[in-house]
Image 1 (cartoon, rainbow, N blue to C red):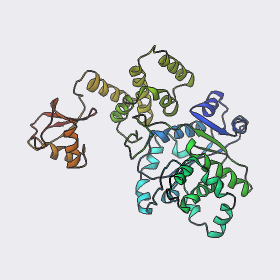
Image 2: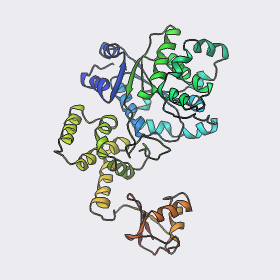
Image 3: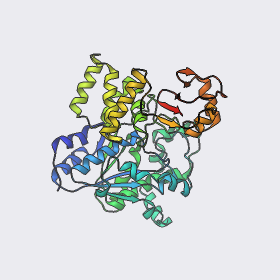
Image 4: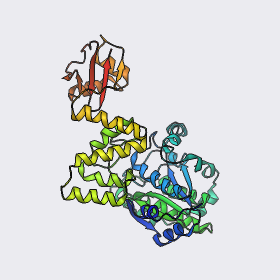
Length: 393
């Protein structure tokens, strides 16, 4: 049964939306009672889904709650080719083995938000690997090179004399053909995907299908306010532990609080607007608002119980400056600090330990560690950065 919940439909059409093509068409479809095929594709270029993509999953869930059919397309083929939409340089091709490893936990991550029993999960290698030169040539004939090179990031690279491979030119065709394969009525994506999303409409017309409507959202910044990027380490991943998610959200700049509320939570829009107004008028403490935001995001990624525990952890560790009760323990009393940190998994290498000590980011019993060879005694508490604690027994 298809529901016509006007409030949820308004959320779909307005929440963190940059552009809808065609808005009247999509609104009419949502009110018609017709079951829509709603498409979202994700390339497993890394092992984690972060909250920049979480907003898309939440919107898919909105469609799903109304009774529409969700297609979650894992781009195991397109990930090897590489999307240039948000890149200022050529993206290298990935090995098939890399892609397979990256997507091992994709479904469990998406399942934190979507009902996977009601979701059609597909791999685009199912159809893209079968295409030959003749069919690809016919698809490519629907586009001009001028259209591709007029894209902002491509134009910039050309002006800077940077290489653009023919492989990159073919990527939009592949994403577009995904829409043809599932007969998509709607495709969701970030505003950086505009060219690829429109390509879907063009190819659908070529294959005598009704063109999909497109819903584009704003891109959210990383936790430091800069562009969200795995390479910059400023992401919040759906699989990050609850304490880490809560702490990372608490560290975001005040000016991006509202966009995080819109994109990463389902706090009602009218309430978000009130929060926005109070923040602008400086009638509310941004830190208190961030606590609410951190709780809401942690709750979605995990559950309410874990969100409450993460909130308590933050309060004790950062506001009251206490050592939290529930912290990881390790039996390595009498060992050196670098050995303990490596064994615990809090660091990945000795060079990282050296860097953290140089930055005064390691403490033992609230005392800054300055010596890499420090021997840690029993019942000591190691603190790495602001969020990570380890008790040595």
